[in-house]
Image (tube, rainbow, N blue to C red; front, side, top):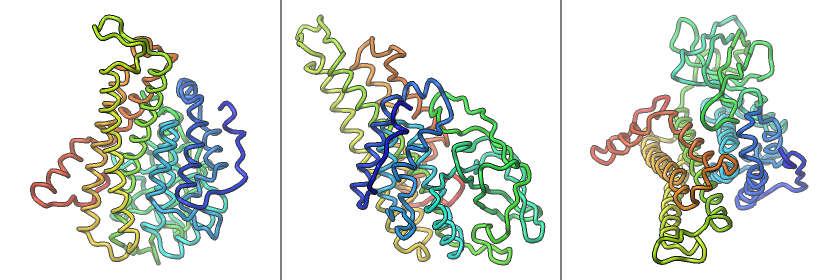
Length: 405
């Protein structure tokens, strides 16, 4: 990075607005060379260091341990801001927040306290090897320890993470077990094979898990080798689906910001339209297009904010949340996600119409925004999100919890 890694902050934010402002500062630094870093595709060590130095990695951590003590509404806004500067890094911080919070979803109260204290004090950066489409990791019981073995085709965070969340099934049972393990160990091999159209700096390649040993006491939510289930533990999927929504919206915001600057500074007016203007920024079709895209982005952001409010209501009484309440939140999140995808892809395409032919040059890099949203929005088919909303609207049904709902 060009200068971003050397940035030093001497004070920590204390309010939600201050945290969002800090994220905006980080985004501005990332945006200065986002295209060059995307083209290079290098492991984003400096970018993660920036997230740590800015304090953003401890946003959700307890204040008494040096964290921000913020809620998910703030976290989602921070994700949007960071993604506006660099979509890949917006995804990384979003996944980090989800896995940082995962202990609260499934762990015992004692485990939650232990994980959050250490993670906050040591500024852990979280990754996760939990791709449901792959075979589960196999877990063997070896007395006081469990041992994870297998392969996952995606592991966002990879080599830039301090810890990785693993999930597998205990051999000879149907028991799923989550555990947080150090990323840097001989039993974990990141394969450096993430080579996709977009989100190129997310370290989302495959991983080999070759006998990772974990004490039973660190198996999330287990007491005496038995799981203590909570309705709240199914909230991990709606939480991360809303993470997706917000970094899509951030990328779309970055696209509009970049395109409007280009139009103001570099786009030439069309001299054959019959109502010729001195600058492209005065042309009616340019103003109409930007107005349409901005309105759609604001609407999508408002729906994402509504979805975040539903998450906050659940977080206010996690042990009393009902399946219906959880399901209705998931429906609104599904609606917000589909709007974010549609709006983001439209913005990523139509900005070329109002920046001009020269804006298609590789040196300009307007393609990065469409590439990033297009790549990650294939995570799970958006048609199924539309259908979830349709079943609710037509039949009053909420989705059953799955790995994708």
